Length: 263
Image (cartoon, rainbow, N blue to C red; front, side, top):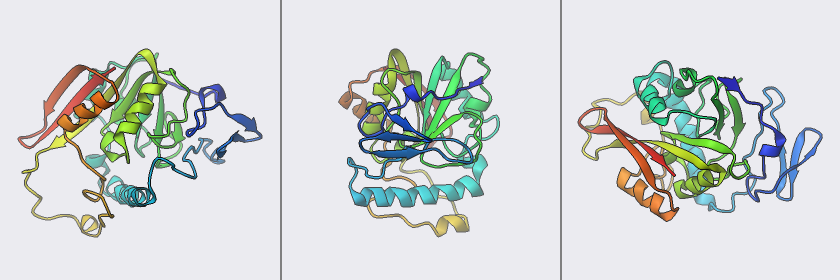
């Protein structure tokens, strides 16, 4: 696997989708200036103003992001792709990685399992996530949002959502953005985890979980809205994407992982 340097000509303003002008160490557009982290040299593309989101949802989402960092730190083995996890390797096999790949919501770990254990030498990964995470990353990384991708049209051979799509403020907008940056012959691979509403609750929750707050408008401490696979498939109809392959892996009698290839 090669770590890809991200050429400036691949990047666009996350809001206007217009090419940048470079001024010293900054990228400049009509909507603002975007800076590179001085220590680890990744770009921060989170816009100052988020026009498609109202302030309440944005504030609630920020609380959810803060909540998420706690289990990532406290129980990373359960909540992140760390080490040779069977489910992540199953997803990698399903995707059959090719070419230049964008991982949207890549997570905070240095090397997610599906990237770390990839054996294809001609595959190149770029990850985007609002969390800075562990630095330096083992792959090319930019800080940003799935609903505001800072990449030009028709760039990637594959776009991945690895258990990340239900963490966005607006998954439909994120899918539209993924479709925009994807090559015509490319595909989007999505991993959704579905949990039955009747799943038994744990007898005892850890202390850190008990302290989490559910912000206004959120369904739980980590999601504005969890959606099932039927809802997800309805989203696809809205953005004119079609399922070309679907694979279901049962975790237990209440949980399953569903992998989609869509175009």
